[in-house]
Amino acid sequence: MAKTTPRPEMALPRDEFSEAVRRFHENPGAVKRESTIHLPDAYGNMATWVLTTYREDGKETVLLQRMSNERPVRIVLPPAVCAALARHRDGAVTASRKKTAKRVAAERLAQGIVPAFLKKAVG
Image 1 (cartoon, rainbow, N blue to C red):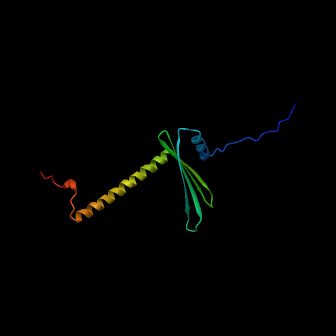
Image 2 (image 1 turned 90 degrees about the horizontal axis):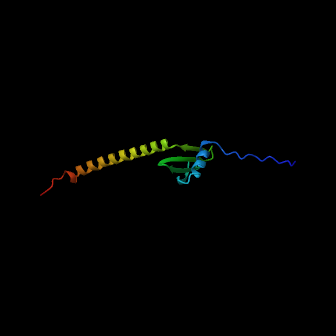
Image 3 (image 1 turned 45 degrees about the horizontal axis):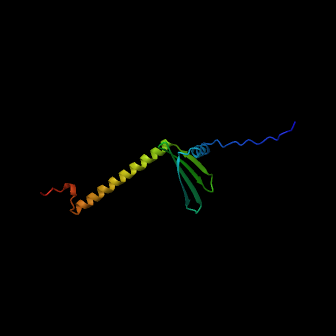
């Protein structure tokens, strides 16, 4: 009887980040966008951020990695967190636009410029 040498098992990583990457790579319907950002700190040390966004079934999941001379970080932002981030961004943009519009309207009024919707139609 021939002896066979045992083959090492190929165990796949089981952390949340690796499982998410595998799941999205196996899904041909998932849309992927990726950005790499290199940012120096105050001392000139570089940190590299890799932001990978997957859109699947109308929901977005973000995989975030930060590599630096310190401990690397890998985070999975689930769809509920991504939706909350989008709501916060949209709310901040709306508030900023309203604030700017009020300031510009006050400046125009101070210059004597009347908004067109307040002018009476001449007929």
